[in-house]
Length: 252
Ligand code: PGA
Figure 1 (cartoon, helix red, strand yellow):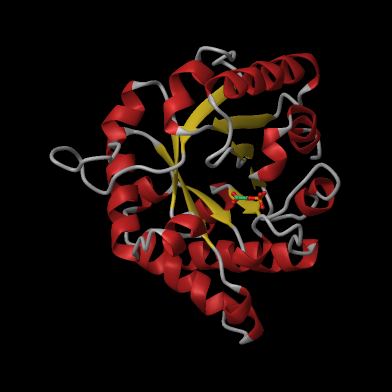
Figure 2 (figure 1 turned 135 degrees about the vertical axis):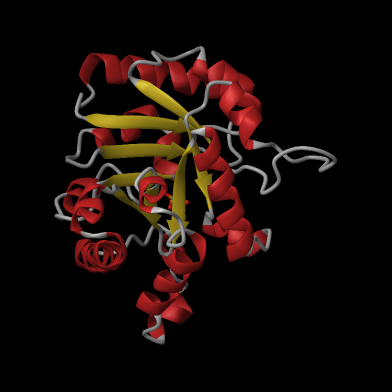
């Protein structure tokens, strides 16, 4: 059975003290009343990873990075390698977030390299895909997502592919307060699972967790998660408030 996952992407928010405080709060709430069936991943800025890791029960909460370099090591000033991320104790890494694709011009080729390096070192990639509003309005959303998956991750061997978590994040829903409807989310998640099934077989498709991201909050999460093919969420804004994040974890 595939895992239910709720991951909190803090983006470029919190300083060290407020980040530690948030991690401690989340840790406590989860210990007291978090749904034990849900895997929880906190994804703070790089600078806080070590402190956050030391502020939570690592048996219950895993830590991820928001990005990694597409190069493995060397003279790449400002970059952070998968080896560094792994060595600090993180287990997950977000790859291909739309903010990286759009603002930092990360290409499918780079994202493919990042995913490959992550898999090689044993980090779980949370690979993001999703269309813009223009693409949806032009009814190209399915083909856009298919192409992102084809170029980013469908070229891996089955045993590597199976280690990836996919996050469907329609760009128009991210940080806008306008979440995809449960029907829109389910429709795309079903489409993605079907593509996986065609490429890697039904068993692989059934075992891959596909998360929804984009203005998911404590109020709408249960409707989104009630869908057959929605296995959890990649949460931005609502992951910055411990109680809201707990509400999402408990929304299954
Ligand atoms: P949001 O962000 O929940 O603030 O919309 C989600 C994401 O970008 O991962």
